[in-house]
Length: 386
Length: 157
Ligand SMILES: [Zn+2]
Image (cartoon, rainbow over the protein chains, first blue to last red):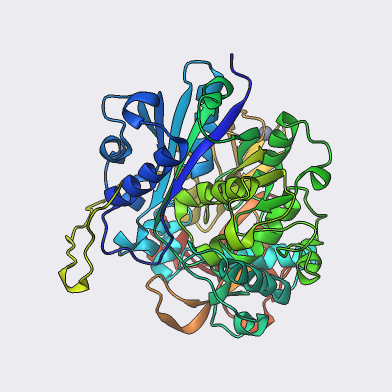
């Protein structure tokens, strides 16, 4: 049985607010082609299994799975869909290879969310229909849940709105060095603090805007990787977890799913002191406060200290723990199911010394973390190493 | 290779309009039936887990902590404290609300859980975590077996 699984190819499109010139199938085709080119493989011969990550409602299809194979090169081959964030797909591909049944697995996740004209309504369908959704009749936008989480997180940890705004400033600035990012900007925290209050304390610029885009990973067993051109980036540990779906019972101030997912991943990777081993991280920042909450959940800083640390520059590109060098979802855009894979992509590019103007010196181990967004309490973690 | 040619003239970009018809009837189930019958009678019901020594609100037939089947339903307090809240300025259509709405997670006294609901009869500035609130039910005639039979939660006087 293969003990190691490596990333041997990545392909991606740019991330942007709209993509009216290409269909969702063409976005996938583009990223897939780049990934196969990068890995030096022919999908029609060399790949044993294909995984896509998609939700029917985001796509506007019933049984979206059926529409996947053609543009991935997986017709007449083992193909399946993971209805979750891209990191869950990566983890499934990793496990398929560990079984010894597969040598090369392709994982794909995309967003063509600009095709969806009623995002708020579809998102509101993710809320319990009987016990919570009726509030929508009173005018409740589903992001009110994020406003409530932010309030509780700030109250439990003493984190301030200014510190959350600092996350936005940092990530959008990082995105300036990422040619693929869709929402780069040079702003100061006053711009964030004075942006329209939507679900107080959550403001417009605290929210990652939606984006289209696609990311494809090629994974390989150690043996198969040897025959390919790239030095693989190894997957050292993975984890995933879900809390209860009851809004009434979930933790509002803590990201328990990220605490559990990371502990599982650290254990697998034999990491006792994550702060010492993890050189940089890409964590979910669908909302500004989530980055701070997630960093604390991952054990990369003490609870209640992420806010202070971001103010002191600890998570800047040249800080002690660079966080979201890609620009994060605040700078790249929220690509929904593709956002976890976009985070994994940045970690791989950094470890390959392939991150252009935002390249981090001397990094050997990076962490990617995803959250499935409001109203979920689910997320995944993957740790990569050179 | 991927694309040999792409459209460069935005006036030529096409799309196709579509919509998804989706209507559901969500069964409320055994625990939901007890909860909503309670609501129609001006009561909030929970289900008790002996093993964990907790009362779940809203009620459910299983305890997600220990996975025991729950059989005992009890009426719980209509009063509680604001666990967290937000002041919403826009609605689901991204339209500016005339008056901000206060949404809150209310932990009901003596139970594990509570309700996510609207808070009223208070200025947004006055709302605080820990504020004591109570359910204000609609008149019995207007109740339909919905969480909206509670009009809102209001500060305990
Ligand atoms: Zn129990």
